[in-house]
Image (cartoon, one colour):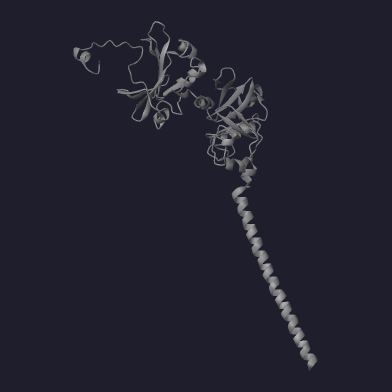
Length: 380
């Protein structure tokens, strides 16, 4: 009887110990499963939020042959101004997920280019590498070959250019335009080599980025340092309304331009609007827009033969004033005013932010004026 009781007690203790171990084991197993699940969720979240790896991202080509017919067809047919989903508006963080880190920089075609293989991207407002952040947004997308491609070989695929334009400074580079399936492709060319292709208007970008005049503040006066105005290249800046001060062009809303320029030397109102006169230039504001920039260049050593230099002919053949407005609906026109003094030359250049509303140039007014008209305030 004692032996049976001892056996039962021993068996009970053994089962109790086993049940205890089994419970602890299940508890540990449960902890492991919970821990594994949490780690799995953490890794999944990290992968989807930080390093998305979809088939679309894997298919992006970072090395692109701009001389291939496959690229030509794909590039022209792709919607947007970029390629393979690399479009203006993407942040640097998004670009890194698709293309990785940039592998170099250079400065051309409108700003500081960040190179990602065959992509060269300009980020809005980024002028130095240390200004680039994950929130910086792509402004322009260029496709650049690993090595510059011979123009003759490029033309075998793309055909003959439909047009071309020079880029300042003269002789450094030019733009060839290729019209393919209703789209205009820009190719930058230098020394017979194709440097890059893009859907952006390179000439407009380059002129628009060109700082028209540096603003200087000296002894309480706001002064402009003018560029080399009497060159063909800078003539194109003025004649395309790319001239700007702090990014403001003639015809633009005036915004905070006047406050940026500081205290004017003189302010007056007339039929044109309110004119703010500074040391060597003036801004006229009408209906909260920049009606006119008046560049006082009398003291500048300019060649007076701007028509020949700018390669454009004045539309006003009745006076010494020269007026340029090649497109009557483009929202601006330019007038060059002569210096009527003994020295001659150019007194000022006006960039006017509206279409020309005056009489047809070159047509003399033969109407007989009445006494009432001559004495009227408007006529005077």
